[in-house]
Each structure stands twice: as C-alpha cells, then as structure tokens.
Length: 208
Image 1 (cartoon, one colour):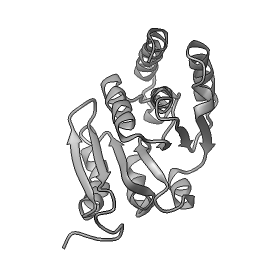
Image 2 (cartoon, rainbow, N blue to C red):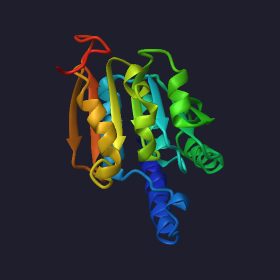
Image 3 (spheres, rainbow, N blue to C red):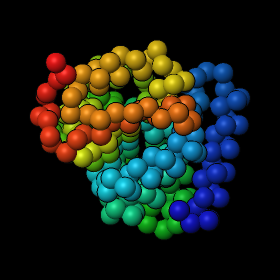
C-alpha cells in the first residue's frame, strides 16, 4: 500500500469512527474493520496467494479497499456482497482508485443476501472468504462457508471476541470440521482463521 493510499484509508477509518459515535442505531453504523485486523487479513491474503476473494459485509468499503490493494499483488479479484446498496462503497473505492489506480477493476459489488450468494458458488471455488456481516445469520448459511473453500483456502471471521455469544454457533460448527486448522487471533475485535488443509481430508469429513 503506497503512502497516499494509506493516508486516504486512515482518514476513511477516522471518518467511520466519528460516524458511528453519532449513530446509536447499530444498523446505521459503518462498523469498520480495525486497521490492525485489516493489515493482518491483507497479509494473510498475500501469503495464501488468494485470487478469488469473497467478502460478506461491505459497509462503506473500508475493508474492501484493503483487500483490493492486497489482491493486486496476487492478480486476484474480490466479490464484495451486502444486502444493502453499495453507493457509499463505490464512491470510496473510486476515490481510492484515484489515489492508487487499478483498485476499482479488482472489485465487483453484489447486492445480495450473503448466505444466498455463498449457496450459488461452486464447491472449492474460493481462496479467501471473509465474513463480516450479521453474525447471528452465519449458522443458517451452513455448510456453504466451508463447502466453497478450495484446498489451501482461508476462512476469516471478524468480531469473535467482541461478540463471542453471537459467533459461538458458527465456531461450534467449524470445530467439527477435521479438514480445518483453526486459530483465533486477539487482534481488533477478534479474528478467527480457518485454513483448509490442502485436501488431506475430504470436505465432508468430521471429527470423530
């Protein structure tokens, strides 16, 4: 990430914090990913060589811009899915593209339910799946968050420490997947990572 883009994205995050502080209604907040979490996720994307990236939960596009910068290094593409419109995210991505050209061409926005989008994807078709949406909905999306992971792919779930009760049902399902190597990282509001161990186990194999 060049200096100009980092300055832009830092200002975007600060604006999101100020916006959220003035909106008591949680659903009206941007609830952006913390910078340290975004930086870690971008690093993981690069080291995994992820090219087909799916983000569920777009908000104002803050995390999308981080991911777009990362997939430029893997020659990848992001599909960012949200049930709400993407007007603000599109505007912010266009502004970021003006600072660092080439970002916008890496991103496709979809206005759709996250679970419905995952259900449409082919088996083993995603290199990195990032869940940052309505946490209580995740169990209803099962088994698609795991089904879509290719061997060697990464699933990342935010807010697992700040909203542990809401994420617990999904983590319980993930714990039954023998093919996944998992860790929760105490960064930001808690990032849970699951790596699909390169096909050493079948996608439907469970812990005995």
